[in-house]
Image (tube, rainbow, N blue to C red; front, side, top):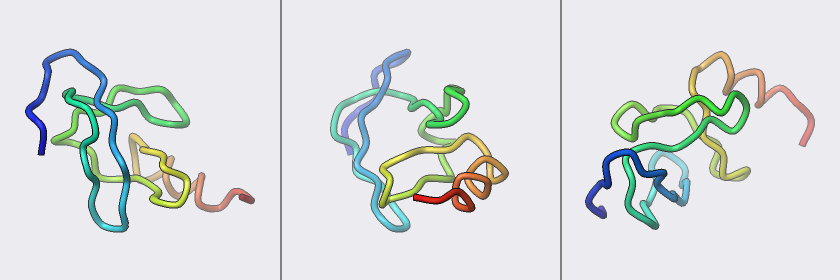
Length: 67
């Protein structure tokens, strides 16, 4: 894993059950709300859509949408 860069947006490749950091940073943005998600708090994402979500509610709502 790359070292974090404080205050910098990380680029990730989302995999089923894990993610790979492509560029250093300490957070990502929620694909729906644009909320800042610290990498150590990132729990919800979709590997097919390559999107991160801030909460379980947002992830579930996005899952229920048509592709």
